[in-house]
Length: 261
Image (cartoon, rainbow, N blue to C red):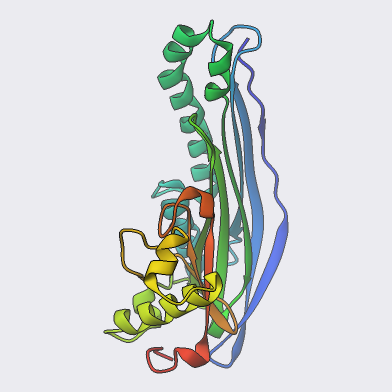
């Protein structure tokens, strides 16, 4: 029989940031959905397991800040726009498991007798988030994404978003750096990568698997931490899967000539 398990929960946390000389308190609540669906009605059928637990800004009559932040999270992390974050979480879990059954059931029936292939159909999709205080009133929103959709291995990613605690505006590189920052920032990131890998030349870097067919670039996947910016590169972005997630930290003191403030 197809099995379905669905759970919602809520918990509260507060991120306090200092912005323009005043203290901004942003209250978050945990929203979650856990859903498990069997691929077929057969005994010992493969399953798809979805676990979603996201931090959502609690609406406290803040003039749209909660709507702005939660809407940006739903759009960027879940690919859903125009609804509240709880509804987006529900919709994602429902669609993901429905697509799993729709797209994979017939294929599994063809492979049913090959036990070695059964593991290919055991799907899982997990999102967990956390928040922390960042620079100049920023809220740093961290997303850990793990999923397996068949193949040789699963995928693990660390995603980040940054928000102004007062307005709820999402902060992108263009909001943090002055125009023309790209070349200078790329040089600093390359220097940080040399230090991280204990290498000195591009040839040595490429020998370690980095930047094999690309130049260094500043990722929009960054965290505006209090003392430094952390740039995050997930597998396949600047290095192969085996290298894993690469995090490069640059102190604000090294960025003062290209920071807006």
